[in-house]
Length: 355
Image (cartoon, rainbow, N blue to C red; front, top):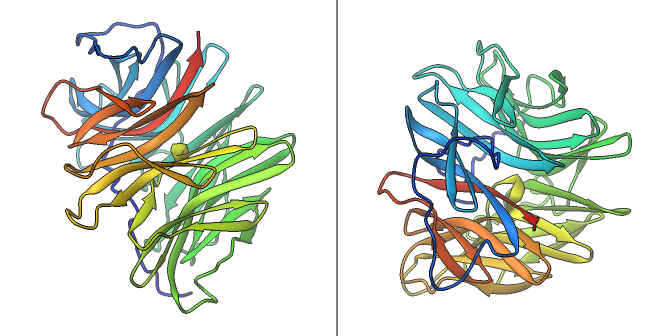
């Protein structure tokens, strides 16, 4: 096994996510924006972290109103969100203070833990097909290494052996086929029904490359899309794959996709990616998205910002991320702050439901 070269492609704060439901008690006041109307054509669900009642807690903003999950634990995180009909699902983990992370998903606010807590486990992606719930994630084994896994209705399938370092970030289902995106050692991979396939360019065979990750997946008809990050020893960039063919995004500056399952959204033939670039003068992160390879900056580099998740409804583009450390929603480039405190916050997923 190669030595693992750890690389953090995007700033991913410790986030606590909650399952979102349009119903439920809400304590904080809704934050509105008087300049534009971010919620006039669609209900907007943003998952992230915020100051929950018991600590750094999982938060879901529904049309700007925060709701919380995991109130019985000091820490929790939701890494992905999916909606089917009227049901809202998130995947992440909970953690009693100083305890082991426990891979968890929520359905309409009801928590289901996927492991017993004897070892560290985390859930990173979620998909729903009919009555079946699929969750992708990682379990740390007795060797101290993390293995890529997924659960179907609570039953775990291990994707890698105990001597390999791997993670699974996102999952999608098409018919009877289950696809998972992640990495093994230093190489971006995906699994189809448990069989792994390496995505090129491959750092294990190209000495100029340092590391690669596939953290998002989408299936459109017969086309299979992945997105992630790739690094040389001096640059970081974004890469997307369509049916195994890679497109890299390097413009001479550092840029990276958010390391979340929600960092890619597809709509027909349109592919949206969320991440950041770096201002060459200020060296601050600029929240950025790409549509079909065309880069669009939504901040100016005067303060740090990042785009963590992206979706679209018609011609409207919705992005969640951080602006100067505050959880923020952008609609067509116009921001509205989601949190109204100075406490740490983050976002990792976004979904819109047209009205």
